[in-house]
Length: 230
Image (cartoon, rainbow, N blue to C red; front, side, top):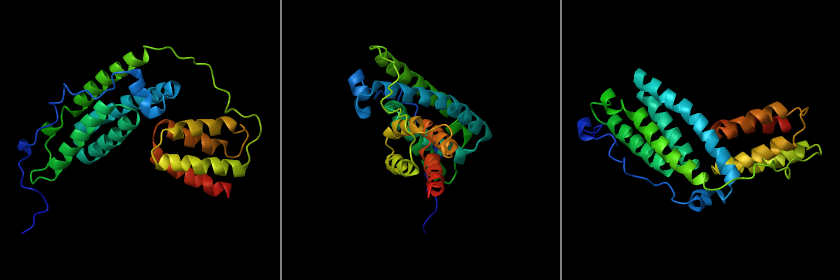
């Protein structure tokens, strides 16, 4: 007879606390920036966005633990795993993947998931994130950055609906690919757009989602905007 759930005893599954010595963070600034084409200004902005979102996500994780809402907790862990990988935090990504696998395995057992299995999840993730971000900022501190605004993409001519449509097509592909260039592309599009454009509010909302690395919401907003442009 086939069982829907495994007969593994949850206590035999250990929460991933034993990876305290694991560090996958790059050792040099060049290695850190390599996945981002060496664009330090872009990466600094990305990390700032990630850290802002992380504070809220950690708070939400603690609330979900208190509520024992394992389904929502697992979903948030999955989301944070994706954004940590996208933002270049391999150690945190590794930790979150381990927690996701652990919680999923627990949910597949006959006994299910007990609070004791994940009560310290938020603290563990916070500790790992703090250590990795400290290491990243130490690497970024080894060099200075010219923060002058790049005006190369800030056009003065009014962008047409056809041009917006073309820009959105490129942006959509970047979002589908999970390409971080979507952040820069959206920023450039917003800079080109006249403040009185009938599409300004939509593009500002779209760029806000992209800034927060919420690509799913951004794709939904892009679809709505594309319809308006027709």
